[in-house]
Length: 104
Image 1 (cartoon, one colour):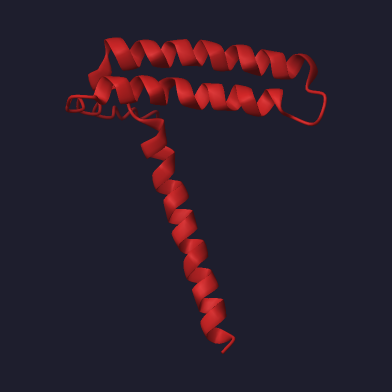
Image 2: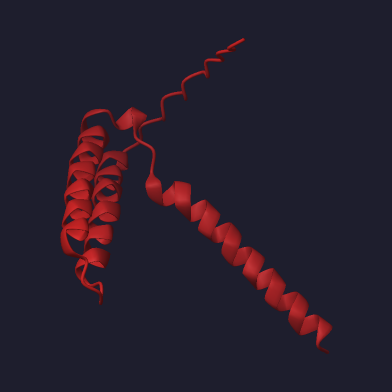
């Protein structure tokens, strides 16, 4: 038996002044940051690195189009991954605090 469950689509985001500009910056920043990481790699990346850079540039174009033309459907990558990074940093700080308190 095959059960198919369809998820509800996410609701449209509220558009506020400045959201389009921030979305465009966010849309370009992440793929360009990955391109920078590839170009500054200390190892020979060869054709794989060039392919990954091409994929990043295509993704940047697609993300920029969504950020500018369909801003209500754009989700911020910085917010999405920043929450997890903040959670991990808070967990690390809590672990350091526990180690410091137990060592007294």
